[in-house]
Length: 124
Image (cartoon, rainbow, N blue to C red; front, side, top):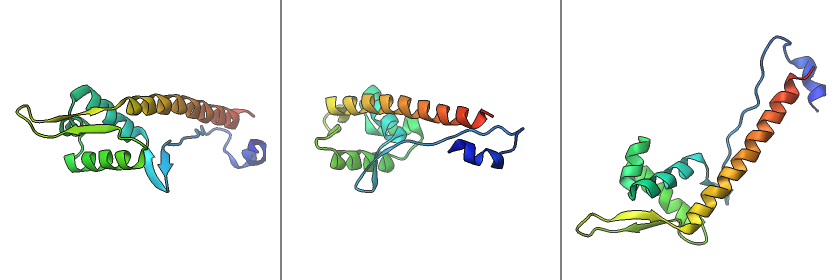
């Protein structure tokens, strides 16, 4: 297929195949780079609010993302802990860690695919 478009590409130009990767659930985003980072930061900080602040994201947006992944997954990925004298907090579940690891592996395969396609474009 690449050979069929080579005549359309400038010889001196550098072309790169790019893409983003996420998993959808019933035509809605379920899990991708932003949610991976949010869950990792919740794990590090113990707080949705602090994770959101670290990412420069509003607390409402972070809360909405957490609510969405919890709704779309078979079991909750984030467990919020309400109030208390220390102010609550949140933890991610073992299922969240499993999904983060899967996404990392999927991303490595995706990046290898993008690199191969870019290299194919460069071959003359």
